[in-house]
Image 1 (tube, rainbow, N blue to C red):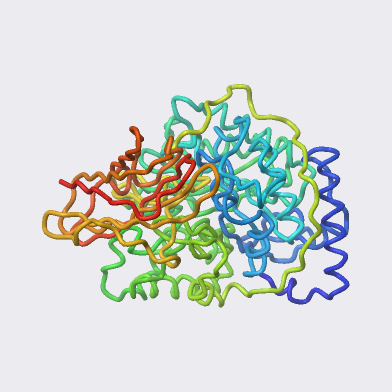
Image 2: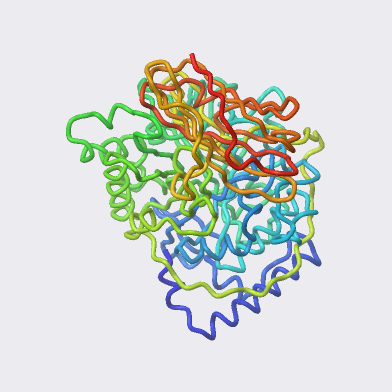
Length: 570
């Protein structure tokens, strides 16, 4: 993936910096549709297509997409998370340095229509604070390109509150979904750094594949949307996820089931455009049957082959593993990770790791809670498919201006929680917003896939909390501060159940806190100086001994440091 970066000469790096500056400046003058210079474009793969089971460049050379998700534009922040701590350039430089060649950028339709984003630290991102989410998207793409990174746009959710089962909701119609995709296709029609569109994140629940019911048939909907996008820009890759429940009665992760594609593929008006994209997670995200089957982890290849790997093994179509990730804390997860990485290396399947963000509740990220310290163990686990590189620093440039705006049905200001991705399993509970999984149990859009997820556990030590150790009737909670700035803060709670918990709440005093603007794994309210949070979605109920990380973002003049937590559980 990054071998070509390693072979850059110092002269090439100088050219890249200059070309990137020209490209971004051009966007600022002409809008998000400016064509890049030939030199800048040559550092990226440019428009891609498919050939059999491979993704190929215009020269016909096989190309592996090595992406990482940077979520947040699908949440109520309408901005990549972490910009309250680090600059956009710092984040992109870190991602390119890890060896990735692509950003998977989750967004919500609600944010596309919003007039402003929030939680951006003006002291480190002064040029981003006043941008609309669309203009911010322009800037992320332009700056990613300057670092040699392509972009896949990921429609993670319709609104910023939660992941939806289907591609439409009562508030966001199929027409709105397609119109917004056509708008984005037009906006970036002349920008080959935008290589593909992930039509809808993690179809699950009633979503079916080729069942013939227009209200549920994801294959048919993906065909309609894919053709609409290609009618505007026929050069884009159309990324199509799977479903949770497959036609043989089996269930897998949200968006992870593609075993019916062989008999009923998505056929679009432009050939060689479709890339199928499952999601896959370890046992800590959701306890699937194969994790306890005899022979684990050697049984995993057969599971992957049956659900989606056969598409590549049989030369049917390319696959991009659209999400996978772990905190890498358990022996089971470590076995899952090493087996999956070996499988990807052997099959040369493209992928998008979940996530760069540390605030993904069930997986953590590739940086610690300070958004800067690298998670070396995870990067070492990815080493067979990912080679770190030295990244030149492009010149800072002005932010690009916008072009076409989204469809008229303006949506309300984002208010939903940036929650983590849930894991789903056959039938039962929803997943948190930033990630995938079967419906039986939760795991989150634009991630956070699910959406943002609560943060990883490898950073600052949680401050001590006053809640008791778990017992047969108690729930323990620990305060985990994340970041703070002049107008707000982000914090998490680390919860451990001593016995089965059907419902829970935690309250604490936080003088100066005026509102909770988003939350994951819980819903929160403010009354006077008291903040009360109640478990919801994937963290609503806990099994005996289960530990989870939930969190929230607040508008405040000051952030509590180690508040006394009052815990109630039943």
